[in-house]
Length: 468
Image (cartoon, rainbow, N blue to C red; front, top):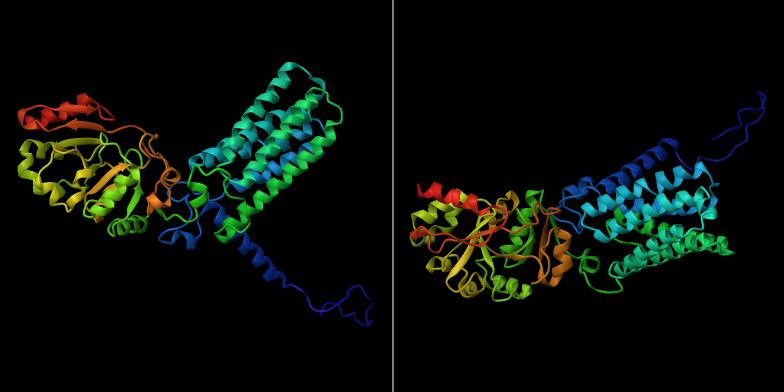
């Protein structure tokens, strides 16, 4: 029971009832919730770390799961700060420390996660608050009615229109946010041109902008805490990329964990096709021992006849069935140049069928030759060790740019064309492999279909070393 302690001795105490909350227990709850939130923010929850796979498509690179919540929060603060913080130097900490620096950090993290649009949006908003927020707060826009100031506003509007077009493939909430951003900059422009009554307009738009930012902040926070989206942000208006519409349904496996590689291996060993990181760009892989999977991968890509699939191995012994057909010189050259980004084009023979490719042989290489490579990547090699030789094509539709991030694999191929994705973040190289023609190697001749990362001189040097 609680008592009033300031009463005179001997006076009766006044009962106030039981405590609604136990102080120590309440402190512990708050501490636990803070730890939970911090764990979600940095992606270090034990539950997440121990899972075999996850619906989070940020696995494999960035330790930040939903850092965009910070970007939304500081945008709301910056918009309201410009309205209510008095003009002068006092506004600079709000627009720079809240509107500028944090958003540049969030934009950098978004870029590292492969979220190009979000990165550009946060960089643009950060620039807006840092530049125009400062000059507006210091009263420069009220005094400067020059063409240069108006041109600056128009430039931000032009960037906003570009972002608006891109936002239609992201979500409805981003579309609304970018529209309000454009309207806000239009207000700055009208203020520069000394249009009367613009202050009320800016107040309304700034509040609306802050409300949408708070909504997006809550949506991001609840998704991080609960592990699934609870507050809707709207589907993409235009379906161009599969990432935002199918990202939560895709199977993302962490390449940093042996369990993640094992799970992708199980998919391939059951006749699936998967996006896999390599020593260059991401590839679409299928196990050679499953002809239907090879055929599916080929048709998924809609490859032209002049761009056949290649074959990758993890150790030279996987080609031992063709050792006699290859000859000692080629066999020794394989030992010397692999693992690397060098592909060797060799003659086809009965040894190909020994790998179990069956009718799908027509999809691998050309009629009389096939390109073989042993990748210089630990994850890829470990995967092939568990699966055996794989058929390989780049993880993008024919004619498009190479895929350099695991997010792009789903964005370009979709769930229908990819059963799982091994996540390792940005590709280490965005360059082609060197393709060497070894079909006449026994006559002492090497040809080059393509000069890539490894220069021609290095290949010839290795060849001379083997010959001697």
